Length: 478
Ligand code: NAD
Image (cartoon, rainbow, N blue to C red):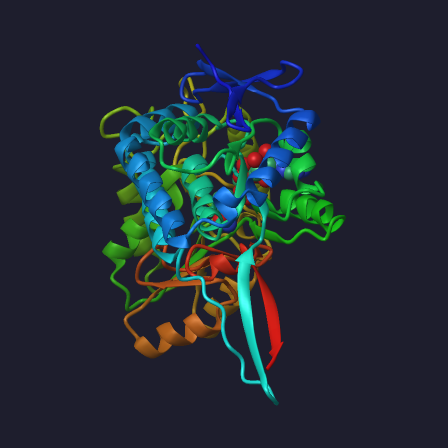
């Protein structure tokens, strides 16, 4: 069993009081490694090192094109190590190797994308009255803390680390305590690769959210906090950050809907709907956990979805041919099953699955529930598991009202060949992302952003760089 260390101030170290926690393989309960549990002293040391690195001329005064070259080298290391990292991700998270591999390659692509933007963070010149020159500078935000969830452990870390570094910030990344191994392994690979990243510009701190995450969120030495996590954590982190008026980016939960009209290609839609809720065993903020379907095609589509997912083998993520792996933890599976049971008391019919799998590990059946109404828990709450709730509608107005009737607003899908209807829905859906005739989909070049309780701020795309830069206006009397 490996004894992992965290990466503070360029050193691989244990926590200051020696405390550790276990990182497990949820498919069989095996302990893969022990990982340090950072103390408040460790957090302080890490923030101090980050501040020193941020102020150092090695980073602050680096030619931005050179920063871009370093990011490209980091992308190359990530591609080169992708298979090794994916195997570790699959073991520690339960997801399939194929899923992990595509996520890690996506993370590398994100680094390439922001590498190209590092020397294109431009200000503007502004026409003002009189004999003056007026311009803006966009300068790096400073020390940034990145608090990462367990569902896409490495990819979501890379998603925010890349723009932060491109903008000239320093980074402290804290993985979720269940899934720290891939980020630690990636950081080790970066450390060994001699990418030219200066000392302590990037650090990885492991430990609990309630202690290490909380200490980072309220730290006066942290200039920006990026959290991807649940809504309750988002509220706690935002409240804590408000003590220092620290800006936050929050990427939180979702209750995405696939809205399917009778003119849609049902066979293709059924495959995408399965992908949208059963990939990663449904543990996705952007899961399409609601299926809103026109009453004329309800029965056919439900049948097609059940037929499609019944072909998905469930099992350990490293096993050849497996399409749905283990949930991340037995405790999480219990929470999903409890919510499902509570939800079903309000109504709905299980037409597929509904149970834990009778074998070692945190496996669960792909589950489809029909007859879900908008007042039901299964319509409103994020279960974060492989559970699809189906609701039928009879008009466009009803479909739109249903789609918007949750506290969340992340990604929704619209399935129709009627161009006017597609764009009307794109306009009227209350969410940060809409996809027409495809689900789920995103790119490093496009904004990943939630409205309502799904979050604050933007990840990916050029817009992400706004968070990592401060605007300064300069006026010159000529
Ligand atoms: P979580 O909120 O439990 O934990 C997320 C991170 O926050 C972890 O690193 C955790 O240690 C830390 N944390 C927990 N309590 C904290 C506190 N008080 N102060 C500071 N940090 C704290 O989330 P999770 O269970 O790991 O992930 C699932 C959630 O993440 C779901 O709600 C999901 O929708 C959301 N998510 C959102 C996106 C997105 O981009 N919108 C992507 C993935 C996951």
